[in-house]
Amino acid sequence: MAKEEDKNVVVLGAGIVGIFTALSLLERGFKVTLVDRDGPAEGASHGNAGVISPWSVVPQAMPGIWKNAPRWLIDPEGPLSIRWPYAPRLIPWMRRFFQVGTEQQLPSTADAMLALNRPNVDLYRYHLKGTGKEHLVVDSVYLHVFRNPDDVDPNGLGWRLRAERGVPFEVLNVGELHEMEPALSPDYKAAFLIKDQARATDPGGIGKALAEKALEMGAVFLRATVQRIIPQEGGGYSLDCGDTQIAAPRLVLTAGAWSARLLATLGIKVPLEAERGYHLILKNPGINVNYSVMDVKRYFVASLMDAGVRLAGTAEFGGLDAKPNYERARMLKGLAQSLFPAINSDDTVEWSGIRPSFPDSLPCIGEVPGHKDLIAAFGHSHYGFGMAPHTGKLAAMVVNDETPNVPMEPYRVDRF
Ligand SMILES: Cc1cc2nc3c(=O)[nH]c(=O)nc-3n(C[C@H](O)[C@H](O)[C@H](O)COP(=O)(O)OP(=O)(O)OC[C@H]3O[C@@H](n4cnc5c(N)ncnc54)[C@H](O)[C@@H]3O)c2cc1C
Image (cartoon, rainbow, N blue to C red; front, side, top):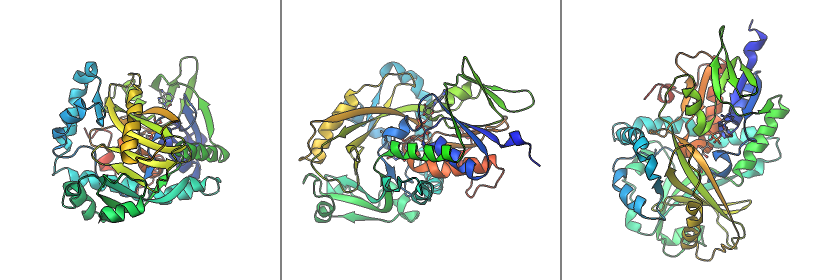
């Protein structure tokens, strides 16, 4: 018979991954303490583009992506920026990024992404049921839009990866595209349409509703900033928060971009980078946007949310402690106007958050080698809102000694 304290689990980080982990543990009869220095879902999980796609199988590292980098870096409206003083520290991560983005490695990465994402819409609906916030997840398609129809190539590597995995997509011509998204600029002439997915109309609101549900199911929320994880003699961990210590007989680390820094207090190194992104909300857009729309060349996503039309994107590498540069959010206004010429952009809200990114776009999920009862569930890069529900379930299965329903090898903590 398990000791009572074996049922106590601390989940460190109340972003969307920590919240789903808490819910999945509670369902299995564990007693959960959710720890965060802020409120639930106030990090990256608050301000993302709200795309919930079972079909996200194409990682960031793709063959030939380096060819775009110089152009992106010199364009002030480009999707990539680097804080130059930080560049030398980024080199090892970049080297790995280019190493994993090969045609040989891609199929296994795509399979591992699919395995995490595939049940995401169903799991969102399952967990939201009864919260009164079910309407915050709506059925959607994903439009990847292009100005030049010649760029719409179903034989391109990314689209072949999707086709081989049964992703339901089709090519739209200019007429079909504008029928679906009438506010789109006539400059856009073709698109890929990915079917059968969903979008969030308030990602942060979903996180808060699910965190509320976890509390109703018995979870305890502690607001504290953890500075160190200290292994205890006889097992378990103590979370050092400066003035307080939190006992964690079992610990799931879901601290997003800050997870590597916390693991480093145990002497464990993982190549996790802070990849800052931005959003701009146009509060009174005066137009309708029906679906998730990605401008593929400019690499940002537009979606109509409860608060207005949200433009989200950009990847900025400057380390975990670099302050946001809100110029990167403001530049999204011009991009919004080029995508939707009639959009009203008078009243805006700027936001920034940090993606936790590994070179292969996959998270770490599973026990940290050499550290019994310390389970990793972090590093979801551009895909964490969609990957969160299944990650939470898998992390809870690991804690509960169940055999996970997907191969866990690709998410190993020591794979690098
Ligand atoms: C602009 C942008 C657009 C995106 N669009 C999408 C999208 O459309 N679809 C998609 O699937 N994904 C998207 N993502 C990615 C997704 O948002 C992230 O992968 C996901 O939110 C990560 O969730 P998380 O719970 O791991 O991290 P977070 O939400 O960052 O949560 C981590 C939590 O840990 C807490 N924490 C950290 N350190 C400590 C500490 N020492 N002590 C106490 N608490 C601590 C933080 O306060 C935070 O609340 C986007 C990201 C960005 C930035």
